[in-house]
Length: 196
Image (cartoon, rainbow, N blue to C red):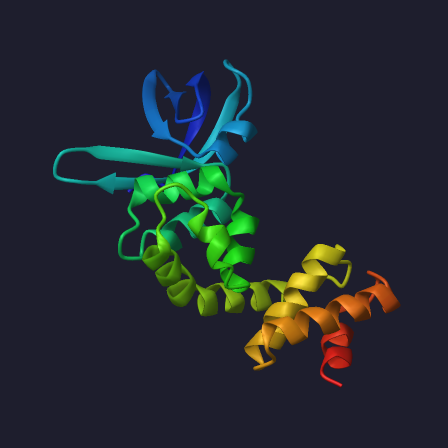
């Protein structure tokens, strides 16, 4: 309903910010990621938003970018994770750390977030891993070959695991190839070498 708010920051703390849009102050719940990106008081900013309508409240959640909002929307589709818990997750870990944890099926990382138990962490991984892997592969297809070694590694691992290679085997192979070939290798060549 409210796609974004674009206005002046009049109040901010790690839990929420107030954005003045033409004399109307929007209280927007935010993650720690968004809080660290907000400009100083009195400066303008634009937050993409999600409006949660409950029986007892209408709550506006704000995000510095569409990437964070997309992950938030994915997380709230999981049984046991509502908007507040999703915001805690985004405050505890960066979007990329959460995505990587899901792709790597790192149960311990997801469980390390306050309020996320073993069953919920398993559901997050089970329900989102394929979706996030596909998104990662699609986004890598549109990127140039100039990757950082961390992104290069994660992209290659995601592809190899999707192809049925055991994660531990894929990690050993990819790490050895990156060490030997250097970070300049393309994802495609890295995957080809790992499949040999």
